[in-house]
Length: 302
Image (tube, rainbow, N blue to C red):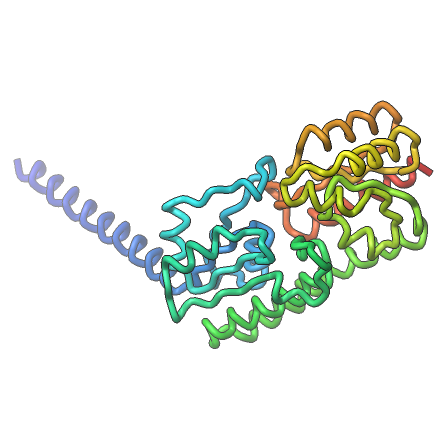
């Protein structure tokens, strides 16, 4: 009988110890979470860059993360509004790319919250082209501003943020080198674009974009291109005037699908690109993979 009570006592002690340990872990996790800088990034590439710069000191929520969805058609949710309300830093692209975010911010005023707008921070934005993250020089400038915001929120870890920024800047060098290599080999090569997103890189590589700019802008803005521009873009494919077609997989219309199908029929290499970062990627290898695909396509066309 005494042994029975002894076993019960031992069991109670063990349960008490386990319970204390679980409670302690929960409290530690909560304290760790509360000490992190809460960041909401509208686009997942800004979220990824922030995680690289902030390390363990940030907790990032990226709203637009589906590479199969059209970012222009996104509708915000209650969960988005709740996250923004708690955020220390919010990062959006601006330039009329994610206007719904401005409505959420207005509905949740917070004088302590820092708002970073990529389109306003970019060092070399193209006219009427919101896709500033495709410019490596723009991303470098935006990363500096994100770092400054992190240091403002957490001055004690400023040196670590600076080290992370230096590492990030170095990681962008291979992208610039790759674009320079493509420029040296294929400068002036005529290419087609289904929309404006890739102009930030075709211009840097001096590729000759034949597709009418009005066509590209119409597709980027969700409008129908004029019949003349559609006919011109199609003719450039059927006559093989363009050597490569760079195709935005996230902004698809019957017009762009027709261009893609015609390019396949003419054996013109197609390079797919996306507006948001694919799952499992970082900004750097996302951009590098697309550049490598483009380089291979240009080589095949040559």
